[in-house]
Image: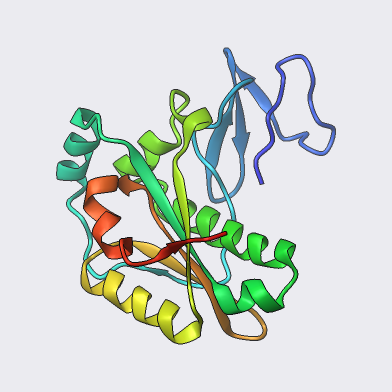
Length: 187
């Protein structure tokens, strides 16, 4: 959950905020993120399932690519059509939100994620929401992404232990688009 704050108005439940020049610093035991009046530099969430990536990318090489690339960064979210047809729409959307935030938080130090969530880009994020038929297809897609070294989060709803959706970390579109070209847009 992200909260936008005005420098003149503090939300009473966030008493641990301390001003730091023009930014507000929010501290917790495990992380720090900054909230400005118009944007967030990092997002936070806890997760219920594991983040998956086959190989660790070279951070220095990725950082150079992220800084020099003018290509649009995109996050893909894939939902299950069988759940869309049987679950309440809000529940399915919530599953996609869980996977998206969890993937971003799991890769919060990644140069592409930092660029995607930067103050300059926070109001113009690009997401593509697609669908697969059911559980076998989402598990198959997750395996293909793992084999290709594409970092993503396969969200598994607990306590039912149902894989409901997945979301990639932000990538340049040209890097990941081929993995999703046969999938339909979610409608």
